[in-house]
Amino acid sequence: MQQEQNFRMGVTTTLSSYFIWGFLPLYWALLSFIPALDVLMYRISFAFFFMVLLLFFARRKAQYISEIKTVFTQSKLLMQMIFAAIFISLNWFLFIFAVSSNMVLEASLAYYINPLLNVVLATVIIKETLSRAEIFAVSAAGIGVLILIVFNGTIPWAAFGMALSFCFYGFIKRSVSISATAGLFIETALVTPIALLYLLFFTTYSVFSMDNSTILLLSGAGIFTAVPLILFSFGAKHIPFSLVGFFQYIAPTTMLFLGIFIFKEPFSLVQFIAFFFIWTGLLTFTSSKILNRRKGKEPLTHE
View 1: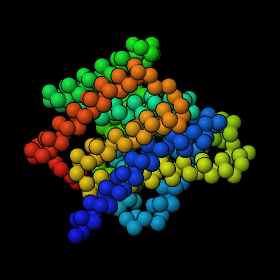
View 2: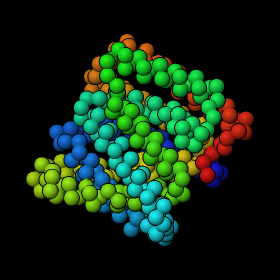
View 3: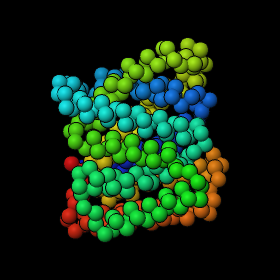
View 4: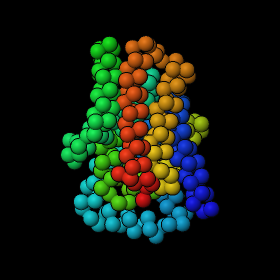
């Protein structure tokens, strides 16, 4: 009975996290009149203050404090978290910039190619061997991206920047055994001093000159940064990897529909063909992972 309750809660929280991420372009669009770099600095600062409050009232406060102390007393772990903070900050900036620059479709592309880019980086960094299905999946996605480059005449640099920064962030976090709550606290704590210095001396949008609605939106950015990550961290531990594999496409698909129907960005036949190749690669990749796990080659749930 408890296992079933955990499973249902896991599905609910994981779905909630992906839907929040998927609809975030609507939130950043409300702040599009503020430069993306300024929004990033406010997001970092308010996320840090929100994490401070969260840790203060957390039931597992002792565990989180212990994890934080461990990171700050071990130079290797601290260096890993510094790089993690840099990569996730870059990812946040590019995402905010893409939305404010009417490139929501490119943002969705980033999170479609992210799983397959993870596979490519795994072969380069940790020398993993690709299966036939993974080779086909990466090739199909590569064709899709190549079509976009050839017909549009430009490289989707924002998409690649978002995907690469998140991939490197994920690779770093894989080697650091730390909870999502403590991890986000440390990451925001490391970059908040830079954010505050920027907001004090370089921003043209001081919080003291803003109206209440803008301040509320900017402070809410901290909540929308932390909450989905915490929801995902809890949910992913209680559901099979196969479900996580399917759920991860909810966010970019939501962004895709937002880009087409809400932000009215052009979606040509060429783009559809390119995305079709990418979707084919993702379907092959996900199906292959599910089959391998059913055969017992990979774990079924997160530990």
